[in-house]
Image (cartoon, rainbow, N blue to C red; front, side, top):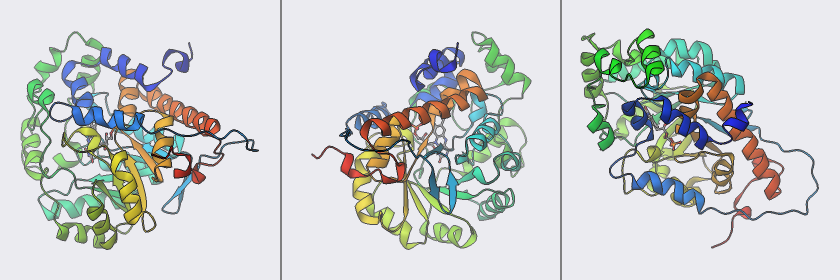
Length: 381
Ligand SMILES: Cc1cc2nc3c(=O)[nH]c(=O)nc-3n(C[C@H](O)[C@H](O)[C@H](O)COP(=O)(O)O)c2cc1C
């Protein structure tokens, strides 16, 4: 059966992933912070965005190519950075890199990744965007930036929305904290998901490969403790400025939700802003990014490249985000469900689904070029 018939939307892949993953690994991706209302709000707010179709227009094909920071991408969406991805699928990040390169979309690698930055860079080439959680140590900060640059990454995200780690009850209950209570034994205990357990054991228990190299302690627990000490604190303005001075390519702040922060990012010389609430994983009371986006567009839309993520799981969602004023959309969980359900083929399938859905949505609303999508398609409130 063709994948599109078996998995005609990301929801189908999500359900298949749930059946394949052990509970702690599924919960890690699926969960939000607190009671999860922030996560639900992301979905509800997108559903509220309605588009008014125009049918009486003359055009034949739909254009979805977008230019960002001087580079052409074949689609207006990319793969968001996600830490500990090999907990879902062995060497997941490298498979994201390959699929992202094939599809010619930006593909991000998290600081908390489970592969070497150099290995990812060799596959992703200029489709690679590195995500930096500025570590406590400035030396490590600078070395990570050098490694990303030398590995050919095109752009750098600096994530600012983790001044402290989010309170995630499902992960806490499952022992997925820093350091995690996951051992070879607990992996084997995931015996009701034997394929996952075997694959994971054969490929080695996932650990923080890129960051782990800076730790003196080489045990999994020791490395995780080290990562816990280094990450999860406020990013100071000083540090943000230093990063701007150091990184020579396109630089994007990730996790902006307030227009004042957006203005500061532009003043500091950042090239782009990713409006995001971290997929509902940080602060339960945060609004959905699509709710704050129009205000941020008004404040800085003409001065910077605005992008958005959190909750986007279909091509129609992407069209909604672009009509609200973003130039580009990132998706996280959608790709994680794809890889968890079907491996790399699943990532390709998510790319195809989002592409087909968004092409259809553009056709249905009568907008032949993604770059012409704007608020004139939105229902006025
Ligand atoms: C499993 C998982 C891990 C994540 N890890 C990171 C990370 O290491 N760094 C980061 O900046 N954002 C991280 N995020 C947030 C994503 O980059 C992105 O903002 C979010 O997933 C978008 O929402 P969505 O999953 O609803 O598409 C993570 C998200 C998920 C689901």
